[in-house]
Length: 177
Image (cartoon, rainbow, N blue to C red; front, side, top):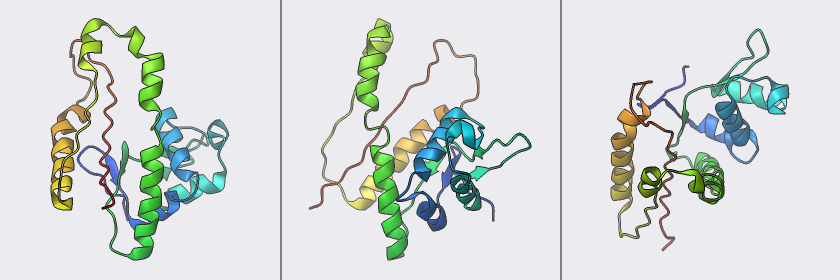
C-alpha cells in the first residue's frame, strides 16, 4: 500500500503510522531526517531498528546504496481515528507534535528578530484569539487556513523578489470544558 499525501505533500497518517510515532523518539528522528535530508543512521545518531520501523509504515525509504534514509513527504497530517486504542496513539502523537517547536518563538526572538530589516520586522507578529466554536467550525477554520497557504507551500522556485522562509505556527487549543 502506498502512503497517501495531501495537497501540500504531507503524509496522511494511518493508525499504524501514528502508533509507530507515538510514545517514543521516532517522531523526533523523523523530524531530524526531514530537516537534514537523506542521512545515514550514524549521521542521525539513530538506531537502525527505529528507521526500519518507520520504513515499515512508509514514513521513510531506505537505506539506499550509500546507507542513506529519506523522509517521505513534507510533513505529517493527522486525522483522529474512531478506534479508541488508535485514538490514544493519536493523542500521544499530537502532544509530541505540539510541544516540538514550542520554543521556536523564543529562539526566533533571541536569534533572528534583531537581524531583520524594518520591513520584515513589521511583517512579523502573533495572532492570539479566543473565540467560541464548535468542533466542526474549528475544523473548517483549519481547513481554510491550509487552503489559503497551499499555493505558497506548493510554490516552486519562482523568481520572486525578497522571498524568504517564514515559519507560521498555529495552535488550535480548545478548552476542556
